[in-house]
Length: 381
Image 1 (tube, rainbow, N blue to C red):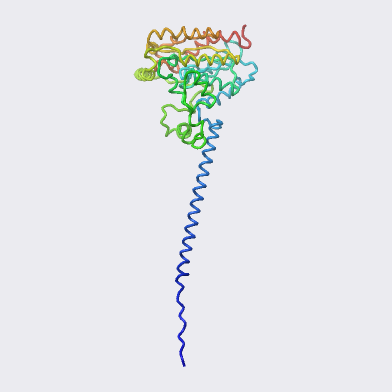
Image 2: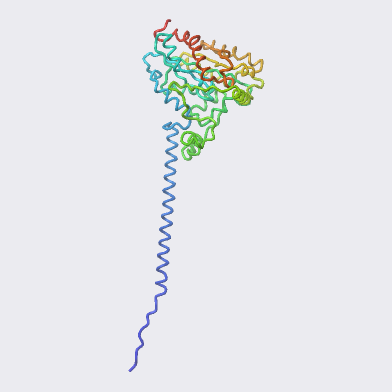
């Protein structure tokens, strides 16, 4: 009887060997798709954040393009008298650079003028660091568009910003393109301060605003990492826009004066007043005249040494030139360069707190009171 050998089942090498391979391929595919989805999701989130930041910046929901202006406008809006409908209240606005910023105690001036004129007078110091005549002209137009309507405006004349002989206007070093709005570029160019269109006005302002506004973002939200010497946002002003400068010892004042001399060194050589500075003053005065706002021009105090840095014959041309402009627009011109003792001017043209007290009181008593009395409510005609 034949014996049948048991059937031997060979392992299905092909089938069993392919199964782990398919599993591995499937797992790898899942990981790849997951990674791709994660990258796509991350890109979408990043793009959304960038676009949202660009929209926020362009609409001033958060003041990134020009934080100095936006922050001070927010403070100004707490003073209802400066609204378009102010019920006849007398309002006085100061515009200018840091020289006015720390020279006019607007709150003190409000009380003094109200007492002197026998009617409520509200004063606000809307000056900004580095704001020359062109910046002032731009800001004045912005304020009117924003519904701010002062009854009177005092416009600072900064003699160094009038230097017409420099290769580029001195104000250009402070007026960074990103601070300007799209419709302001043509105006600034017309006033003799050509500024290139900033990248923030183009697609990069939407797609990469975190890069384009990096200086402003660090200054506002992480100032410890900012390389700026002076902050753009959140200046420690009082409720009326005034910043009180502390006293400095003589040895420090000498160092500050030397820094100032170097800072404006290109203005002193062959000084000749005119240029974009005068165009900016003229535009601001035209804006005031069109809007029915009373205007005045003011040169804030300067030390003896600071005034000597302006060479002749340019130095002697400053007052006649500004006086001619004032006469053309029939506005008063207050030349206060020699009003305050040198000891109150730490760096030669910025007043200490004590100096600002002296200057504010004298300016109100001798110039502003008589000027405002002629047209403020309740005053003499």
